[in-house]
Length: 125
Image 1 (cartoon, rainbow, N blue to C red):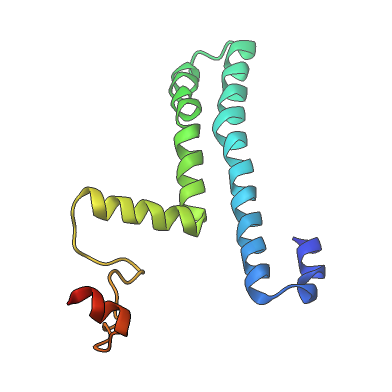
Image 2: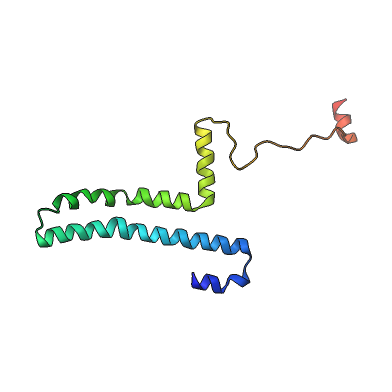
Protein backbone atom coordinates (compact mmCIF):
# COMPACT_ATOMS: atom_id res chain seq x y z
CA UNK A 1 0.00 0.00 0.00
CA UNK A 2 2.93 2.31 0.71
CA UNK A 3 4.31 1.79 -2.81
CA UNK A 4 0.88 2.50 -4.27
CA UNK A 5 0.65 5.78 -2.35
CA UNK A 6 4.12 6.81 -3.59
CA UNK A 7 3.08 6.21 -7.19
CA UNK A 8 -0.30 7.89 -6.77
CA UNK A 9 0.74 11.10 -8.52
CA UNK A 10 1.77 9.14 -11.63
CA UNK A 11 -1.65 7.57 -12.18
CA UNK A 12 -5.19 8.78 -12.62
CA UNK A 13 -7.68 8.69 -9.76
CA UNK A 14 -9.58 5.85 -11.41
CA UNK A 15 -6.42 3.76 -11.85
CA UNK A 16 -5.38 4.43 -8.25
CA UNK A 17 -8.80 3.35 -6.99
CA UNK A 18 -8.68 0.17 -9.09
CA UNK A 19 -5.23 -0.72 -7.75
CA UNK A 20 -6.30 0.02 -4.18
CA UNK A 21 -9.38 -2.18 -4.53
CA UNK A 22 -7.28 -4.98 -6.05
CA UNK A 23 -4.76 -4.79 -3.17
CA UNK A 24 -7.49 -4.93 -0.54
CA UNK A 25 -9.09 -7.90 -2.34
CA UNK A 26 -5.74 -9.68 -2.55
CA UNK A 27 -4.99 -9.06 1.14
CA UNK A 28 -8.36 -10.49 2.17
CA UNK A 29 -7.85 -13.51 -0.04
CA UNK A 30 -4.47 -14.09 1.60
CA UNK A 31 -5.89 -13.87 5.13
CA UNK A 32 -8.69 -16.39 4.59
CA UNK A 33 -6.49 -19.52 4.23
CA UNK A 34 -4.48 -18.48 7.26
CA UNK A 35 -7.56 -18.17 9.42
CA UNK A 36 -9.67 -21.00 8.01
CA UNK A 37 -6.95 -23.62 7.45
CA UNK A 38 -3.91 -22.95 9.62
CA UNK A 39 -5.75 -22.07 12.85
CA UNK A 40 -7.93 -25.24 12.85
CA UNK A 41 -4.94 -27.44 12.02
CA UNK A 42 -2.95 -25.84 14.85
CA UNK A 43 -5.87 -26.44 17.17
CA UNK A 44 -5.98 -30.12 16.18
CA UNK A 45 -2.21 -30.44 16.65
CA UNK A 46 -2.50 -28.89 20.12
CA UNK A 47 -5.23 -31.37 21.10
CA UNK A 48 -3.19 -34.33 19.81
CA UNK A 49 0.12 -33.24 21.34
CA UNK A 50 -1.26 -32.26 24.76
CA UNK A 51 -3.90 -35.02 24.86
CA UNK A 52 -6.59 -32.49 25.85
CA UNK A 53 -9.83 -34.43 25.99
CA UNK A 54 -11.88 -31.31 26.75
CA UNK A 55 -10.91 -29.64 23.46
CA UNK A 56 -11.47 -32.65 21.19
CA UNK A 57 -14.98 -31.59 20.27
CA UNK A 58 -13.79 -28.08 19.40
CA UNK A 59 -10.96 -29.51 17.27
CA UNK A 60 -13.38 -31.82 15.49
CA UNK A 61 -15.87 -29.03 14.87
CA UNK A 62 -13.12 -26.80 13.49
CA UNK A 63 -12.79 -29.15 10.51
CA UNK A 64 -15.85 -27.37 9.13
CA UNK A 65 -13.69 -24.25 8.80
CA UNK A 66 -11.16 -26.13 6.69
CA UNK A 67 -13.92 -27.46 4.47
CA UNK A 68 -15.55 -24.06 4.04
CA UNK A 69 -12.46 -22.05 3.20
CA UNK A 70 -12.94 -22.33 -0.57
CA UNK A 71 -16.55 -21.19 -0.29
CA UNK A 72 -15.43 -18.17 1.75
CA UNK A 73 -12.60 -17.51 -0.70
CA UNK A 74 -14.98 -17.40 -3.66
CA UNK A 75 -17.45 -15.21 -1.77
CA UNK A 76 -14.75 -12.69 -0.93
CA UNK A 77 -13.48 -12.73 -4.51
CA UNK A 78 -16.95 -12.08 -5.93
CA UNK A 79 -17.86 -9.41 -3.40
CA UNK A 80 -14.57 -7.53 -3.73
CA UNK A 81 -14.56 -7.37 -7.54
CA UNK A 82 -17.13 -5.06 -9.13
CA UNK A 83 -17.12 -6.92 -12.47
CA UNK A 84 -17.87 -10.25 -10.76
CA UNK A 85 -20.60 -8.60 -8.65
CA UNK A 86 -22.25 -7.15 -11.76
CA UNK A 87 -22.15 -10.46 -13.66
CA UNK A 88 -23.54 -12.34 -10.66
CA UNK A 89 -26.31 -9.78 -10.26
CA UNK A 90 -27.23 -10.02 -13.96
CA UNK A 91 -27.24 -13.84 -13.84
CA UNK A 92 -29.41 -13.76 -10.71
CA UNK A 93 -31.99 -11.44 -12.28
CA UNK A 94 -31.98 -13.47 -15.48
CA UNK A 95 -32.28 -16.81 -13.69
CA UNK A 96 -35.30 -15.72 -11.66
CA UNK A 97 -36.74 -13.77 -14.61
CA UNK A 98 -37.03 -10.56 -12.64
CA UNK A 99 -37.71 -7.40 -14.60
CA UNK A 100 -35.84 -5.16 -12.21
CA UNK A 101 -33.08 -3.35 -14.04
CA UNK A 102 -29.60 -3.42 -12.63
CA UNK A 103 -27.16 -0.53 -12.94
CA UNK A 104 -27.17 -0.86 -16.71
CA UNK A 105 -29.89 0.47 -18.97
CA UNK A 106 -31.35 -2.19 -21.21
CA UNK A 107 -32.72 -1.33 -24.60
CA UNK A 108 -32.01 1.69 -26.72
CA UNK A 109 -33.08 5.21 -25.98
CA UNK A 110 -32.17 6.34 -29.50
CA UNK A 111 -35.17 7.10 -31.67
CA UNK A 112 -34.99 5.80 -35.26
CA UNK A 113 -34.55 8.38 -37.96
CA UNK A 114 -37.56 9.19 -40.11
CA UNK A 115 -35.27 10.07 -43.00
CA UNK A 116 -33.96 7.34 -45.23
CA UNK A 117 -31.34 7.50 -47.89
CA UNK A 118 -32.22 6.97 -51.51
CA UNK A 119 -30.74 3.46 -51.62
CA UNK A 120 -33.17 2.23 -48.95
CA UNK A 121 -36.11 3.85 -50.74
CA UNK A 122 -35.19 2.05 -53.96
CA UNK A 123 -35.04 -1.29 -52.15
CA UNK A 124 -38.47 -0.80 -50.61
CA UNK A 125 -40.16 -0.01 -53.93
